[in-house]
Length: 265
Ligand code: DGL
Image 1 (spheres, rainbow, N blue to C red):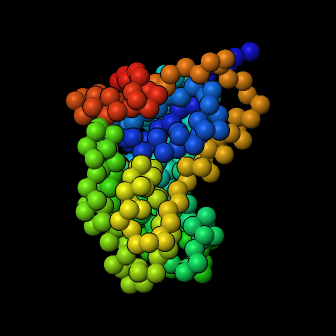
Image 2: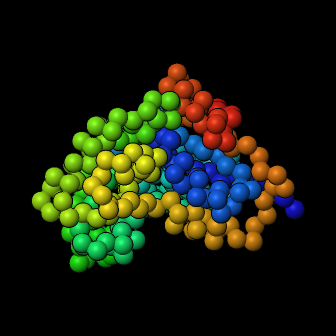
């Protein structure tokens, strides 16, 4: 029996696309609802209290409306702050996004890792905990960037990113003590893999990037293993919490990526 229940991906903006892509590579028939909290964007400059109050309530409304089989919080900021509260509030599986410090530690030869996230994510105790547990013998340097989040959004709206500005943001890691030894950068914000080609172009030779997308996709595939999917995959649905001019420009970019329909929550 075809099961039409979608997977609901949630982010403040377009970053969650870096999680949708590897998921659809594993489960091409999955119906997808992509929800962007454009009214709350950006999350990275908000307080913990604001995010903790906003995200579980919003996901409750989205689940009521779209009846998904699984929710993916495709946002490091929301996950590192609100994942336990969301899980407690919803009666269905919830997959979160956490900084890929463990795979980065496995890849690093120099034992110096850079964690690039939002300002809110890089200050979370959760990140300290991951560094202690999985990268105990590494120096873990962090930098929070709101500019990269903006640039990723602009790219989707058709504005190419400035390599100079990307270089300035990466310097936030490389200019720290021991920063010149970084050989792996964790993209600890789901927006950043959307700029990875440009970041790689300006980063020192040999620096590699890693993010949580592929691991989350494997987790989603494992949680939905054995479930039925629709016979033909329906077009993705895009939902914004505010649908204004900026969102319409982004929606036009997303129409070319499998999301022809945009609606407001
Ligand atoms: N994409 C989000 C993350 O992974 C947050 C971006 C923002 O709204 O600041 O952290």
